[in-house]
Amino acid sequence: MLREFTGYKKGVNLGGWLSQCEHSTGHYNSFITESDIAEIASWGVDHVRLPIDYELVRSSDGQDLETGYRCIDKCLEWCEKHKLNMILDLHKTAGYVFDSKVNSFFDSPELQNEFVSLWEELAKRYGNLSNRLCFELLNEVVDTEVADQWNDISLRAVKAIRKHADRIRIIIGGVRNNSVLFVDRLGKPFDENIVYTFHYYEPLIFTHQGAYWIDTMPQDFRSGYPLSFKQAAALSEKYLPAENCEFLDFISSDNTDAGFIRSAFKKAVDYAEKMNVPLYCGEYGVIDRADCADALKWLKDLNDVFSQYDIARAIWTYRSKDFGITDSHYAPIFEKIKTLL
Image 1: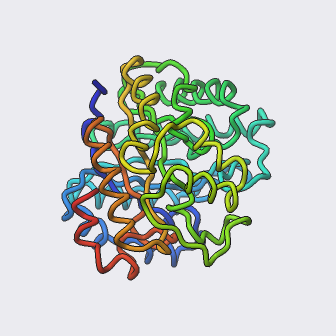
Image 2 (image 1 turned 60 degrees about the vertical axis):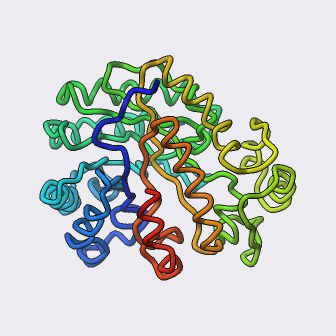
């Protein structure tokens, strides 16, 4: 059986607040407020995942920005008041952005040193909060070719954190955008307080239907759920970049239903059990172009598999970013969505 990720069984992402956003005081003060944290707590979840960008807390010349740290402090205060735990997720770091093909991080020792330095600073500030906070090193490493290099860099960061925080849990994701199929490329855990993470949006042709940021995807394309495996493969080949079609090459299934999800998860679950490491799905969700009834079917199938394997998770996302569960698109089924978190 998987080790339990205690305190982080069901959660909600706060995407678009301190990451992938307009970095301004006005935005920071308005996008999420204490009332939002209180609302999330009322749903019966136990944590939020807080994505942050490097530029929130550090300037281009490496100076710490106290205005950004105060935003993190504020979220921690609200979570403590409303009895929620928190994951601090470095969504973008200097030289690395998961949704860009132009990155210099893995070619630059200086940028890697800055990454380690930032995590050491975060550990100094927040490492004493291990009873209600976890650290997530970096969101969605894309290139499969840097798997071994990423293991080396993440180990350096873990060791830097451990100088100041010997018990805080540290979450590490793998390559191909934290694919569940590449969890087994992660290195052996440094200690007993390491957690493996993955993201799950498969079949992507359903969860990202009509996504304007995918160049090959028509914005008026729509897809139902579940699809036959053959339908999913054919539509993916037609409308998704080649690297986004690879997922289906590793799965054997007749339909993209709960059985498909179980098949997709099995290798990661087996590896996490072997390494005695908890497993966490840090993101999952359906774009707001999808039919609400089909989105519910997908969420139910996924929830069933999460429950079967006892996998902790956090849905993407609370508001906006085309996946916001509290936005108007999902209003007709929102009460049902809450039961499937």
